[in-house]
Image 1 (cartoon, rainbow, N blue to C red):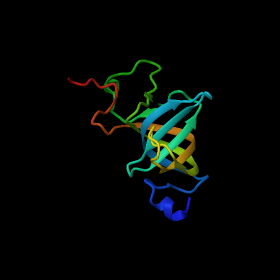
Image 2: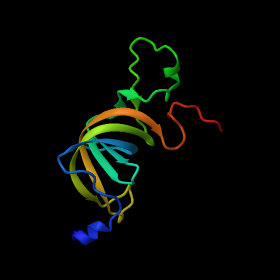
Image 3: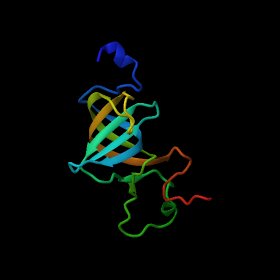
Length: 144
């Protein structure tokens, strides 16, 4: 693709390839593949897209921001680790390597919607920081 055409695509490439960075991302979706690994699609607050291929079926953050779970307001049972299983819409911190910058031909199932994406690997999850839809946790009860 000519450089001029790449400039017109949605999103930006973040960081230098093969370098490690700290990120705050929002999980958009998780999909499984026939090869036995999972694809995690994410975005940052600037609208840049990220993708990671991982052998873990679930991403459990080892730390949760204080008071995002009701359980944090009382004494925890022995063995409680403060972890949080990420679900679509959750925001979290991580440290990862930008493996490469890529142009994706499909944007979440829609053909002909090319966009720039950052391919991450060696993702080390940080902490769950909340949700952008107004709920602090997917465990929170909603009123109808």
